Each structure stands twice: as C-alpha cells, then as structure tokens.
Length: 191
Image 1 (cartoon, one colour):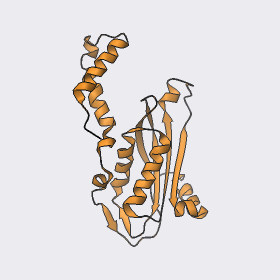
Image 2 (spheres, rainbow, N blue to C red; image 1 turned 30 degrees about the horizontal axis):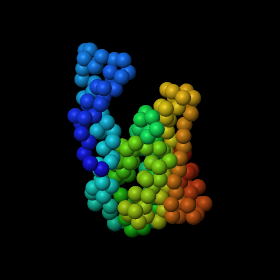
Image 3 (cartoon, one colour; image 1 turned 90 degrees about the horizontal axis):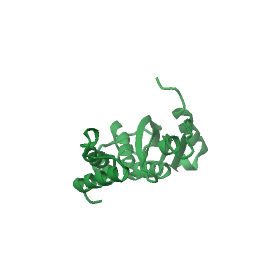
Image 4 (cartoon, rainbow, N blue to C red; image 1 turned 90 degrees about the vertical axis):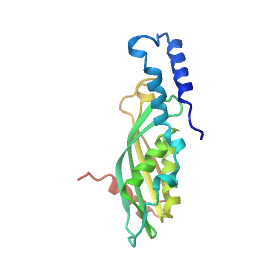
C-alpha cells in the first residue's frame, strides 16, 4: 500500500468536524485534525509493514517438538465496518518443525495484522497463516477473545459481550488431541 498523505487526512478530519457541527478553530479542537491524521497513520501501519521484515530473521533452529504457546498477547484493532476499536487477547500455539520464533516476533505479527482495518475472523486467520508460512510449523492454533466498541457504544449496546475466534492449521486441525492440548493450556491461569 502507498504511504498515506497526512496533510490530506488532516484536511478531511477538519471538514468532518465542520460537518458534525463543530468549530475546528476552537481551542480544544485546533490540533485535533493533525492528531487524527497521526493516529490513523499509526493505527493502519500494518498495511505498510511486511511480515518478513517484522520477523527479521528471528527464526532459530531447534530440535524441540513440543508445543510452543504464547498467550495473553494484547490486541488492539479497528473494525472495518465502523472504524471503532476492538480489543482483547490473542493466544498462539504452534508445533515447530526444526525452527522456533524469537519470543517477541509472535506479538509483533499480531500487531502487524491488527494495525489494519479488520474483522476479527480475518485477523485470526491472517496471524495463523503467517506463522505457518514463516517457519513451516507442523501446526498452528490462534484464538482471539475481543470486545468490540461498535457493539458496546452503539448498535445493540451490549457491554459484556465478547467475540471469540479461532484458526487451526496442520496438526491442530487434523488431530483432536493436539487441538485439545492447546485449548487446555491457554485456559490455564497465568503464573
């Protein structure tokens, strides 16, 4: 995706404030269009980030054949329908086939895909597929639990609802015992 034009977004944000009945020249709003442009630049940076660059070669040879799990990775994204935030936790498990990730790279992959206009279902699939493609894992499982402000602040206004999505590939899909081990481990209390 091309680099975004911050000046144009700033101008559009100013026009939006006017259309909403606000005065973009009043003290509290004078810098708001610039802040909106900078915020959207950051919140959509996943479009301008390459997964290969994000991983940056941090895949290491390993003889381990046990499941590797990183859980409770914070997720913040914008829904593509209302551009309102959804947020929650992502849990990732994979079974290596000769390579493991540097520990921070899974969280960085979550951020990369979350910093796009998203639906949670696609986000979950993109993360699992990127992990599978990056290291040729024997299997990958990703679960995301999130709250959506488009459900909480507007629309049905349900404050306690959560959406849970999962994506399982390889042995996580093909073997019920492997899938169950993953689900059991991510639901254990943290230390």
